[in-house]
Length: 252
Ligand code: FPP
Image 1 (cartoon, rainbow, N blue to C red):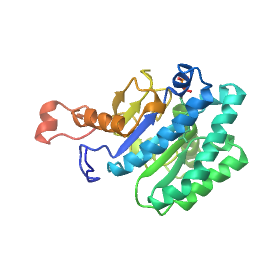
Image 2: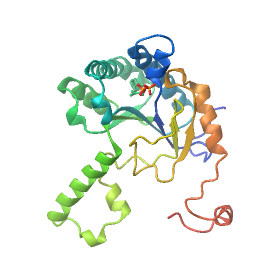
Image 3: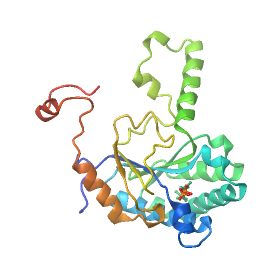
Image 4: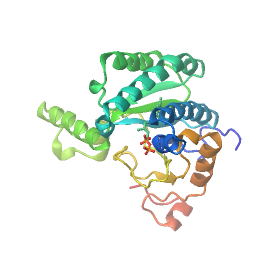
């Protein structure tokens, strides 16, 4: 697949990925799970580069879920140190490639050091105009909705808006980063067919592509295959095929 313009409707503007299968990749090779996460980090680097080249605007990576805090302490520690390492090593390269880093999640649960590293990466790349890479870190979809509701209730109490006027657009403005458009394509690697509490609000109309490829093996060709699959879908947003094809009707 050659590079396409960012306005080509066959290229999803926002791709979100559930990077699953690191542990199984390692275990099937008789290796420690950490080795799978390390290779997973390399896959994240490859895919970020490929996403920029393919003209994708936003790439969200599910790097650590709220549920992942319940993994064995040693694995949590390893994952945190991998993330820290990634940000330390990659930030210069991301700057060179005009990549903007964003983060969504309950960052208050991260260590002070990691949170500072994350915040400094976000601040340093803020003016970049190329690909947006969003790390979902200490993230849960339900938690995000609860956190948005908290903010809404606070503002309603302050009289900033009338609850009777609440609509989807207003609600969405309270999500972690309301500048990020909803994902067009959700990819899940590693054979499982679950959403796993990822971007629950935002994936309402996302196309879903799953693959048996384990995340550490996922590469540019697998991303392109997902984009080819996406390009074959007819996105109807609740409309009939006739309405979509004639260009009438309105997205609900
Ligand atoms: C799922 O594999 C993956 C994770 C819980 C963590 C994802 C982390 C990385 C890819 C490494 C760092 C990433 C970045 C973006 C720097 P799993 O352990 O649940 O695999 P399993 O289902 O086979 O056990």
